[in-house]
Image 1 (cartoon, rainbow, N blue to C red):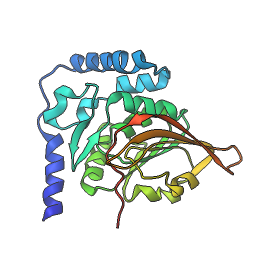
Image 2: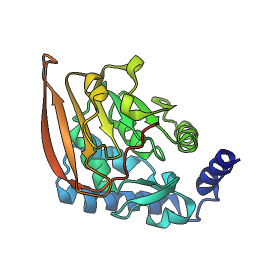
Image 3: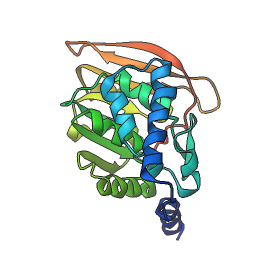
Length: 235
């Protein structure tokens, strides 16, 4: 009963009638978001900026928060999870250095917004979400919006997606206590992983892990302080 109720609640958050705001207004809001929050703060990757101008972020947040969809802050999406602020989404995507043929693994599908941005920049996107209700809702939303190159599964993202590996890039959208070894193993030689690391009640930093060209080692660089929900593990 609890699972059925939670699934219905998550879907209801997004299924409410859309506001009467004209489509042109949403487009203008996305342009302002990119100009003021991303480009003005140093994000320069043209493909990333184009993706952020394209993906309708307001359709990835609950109805009650759509007026705030393009604000410079995270928003709740249900099941005690959040959608990251636009700058963080753009920054993490840029750090992956994606190309149109890149294969990307995302850990933490959430509402599906980050996966949609990745799909605008890369080739295939594989996304794992541990909360079944969020995974199913995101998969349906992405399919409805035409993101057929995003593959969603329910599971423990710490273990990655071994049968789809190796990946050119991996992005983790929840804070791990350490860098997950299974994810490092699923990176191609020369691949990059971006993730927040740190305890849920303490300091967290965003890091970029780069695997060497021969696959024998990694180099980790601290990028900036962040605050993410914790990476949930299965018992």
